Image (cartoon, rainbow, N blue to C red; front, top):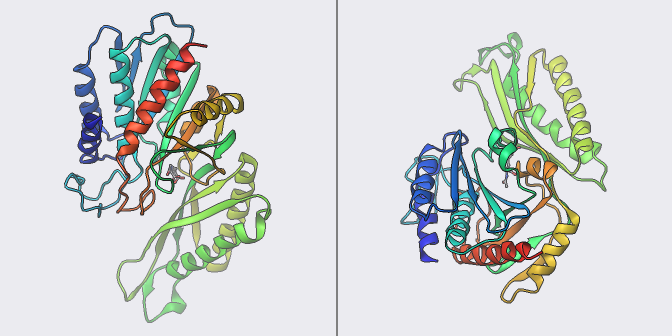
Length: 373
Ligand SMILES: CC(=O)N[C@@H](CCC[C@H](N)C(=O)O)C(=O)O
């Protein structure tokens, strides 16, 4: 198992943003090429990889998806094996997800398996989304799984925990980019300008009213602004400002309603501040919806395992483009407890590496169990 902790550490050093996972892809391919090749087939797609393991008497194909990309975060973990890529970090656990996938592949190249297995190393989960285009490939047409699995590390649960639920697990998401253009000028002559810093501040405040005043209190939504840029220097009134954020809802219908309200607010900003606004929704992800019967069965399987604490969790406002795979293929996602004081997308995220063994052991047993059906 030390091998896969080392694999995680090696991957942790080379985080790359979406569709730039070149070193990551090379690392994975180098590892895969050193495995026994007799029942293995490897194909690449952009910076992603498909791996097929031929089963002994396949009646179905079981898929497993691992995302590959890192985030634009400057690491502050203090790890000896910290990121070698300045300003980029595996702060969402994709280094764990990939090393677990390699652990499973290694196991099933050395131990016979009944069903065919297809592993998908998927680029760009954090954006702009690799799952949907990966689904549209010829390789996927040929190797499409009959059921598909994925996990995500969960810093809030201790090692040894697995958390999931039937049905909705993760939210619908939409990125949000709003560009404001007004009239800049001298800081001392505000009456001759349309100040986009003031317009952006007002817009951010008004956006907060959507969840507070327009979403049914018994429903749920998130509108987060994560970045504002604008202006050039302290004594020039800003001609441009840009707001970057994300919207999360528990249904596609609520997403449409939130966007409609957001567009009205942005129109109001255009009128009120005599400026032009352009909205771009960027990448949008379909909700993660776990197939209820399969998830029930998986939860029963996990509950019967020694040493694993099964948690029936609530849905979360995180997003995952794995939702697109689950829209077309029955399957499920679960949270893997990694007990870290700092959460996902934090520069000090330090997941407990013992969880790698928990996941490999759990998933090898589950895949073997599914083969006996
Ligand atoms: C598990 C996780 O953290 N996923 C990301 C997905 C990001 C989607 C997109 N870039 C957006 O921000 O809307 C998340 O932030 O939940």
